[in-house]
Image (cartoon, rainbow, N blue to C red):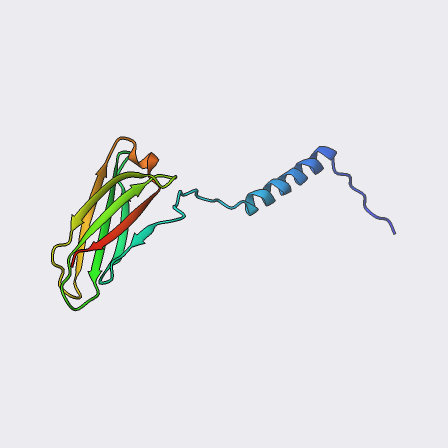
Length: 136
């Protein structure tokens, strides 16, 4: 029996191997979007007034807005002061603001957006610290 023999040029063989290696590498490459996240966010709550939600909005290079919603989980009215701190990588406070909820009826919620402005604030910012101090 006569077998057909056909030779493939060496450069073509190398090109095919490179193409298959490159194709495999591209197929197995996973695109990872690097996002800076905080490994810790601190929330210190009162007994009757609890944090319902915290939303942080980056508004350019020099501004960060933090929307805090708290809820009075008791049936009686309570008043609290809500503190929001922006901290850097080492945990040092960059900026801090506070607002009173005034008298918050039982079962109701209260929201406030804290607006922080400072030159290059976003590059220093790492996480937020929310503290609720109940007054009565």
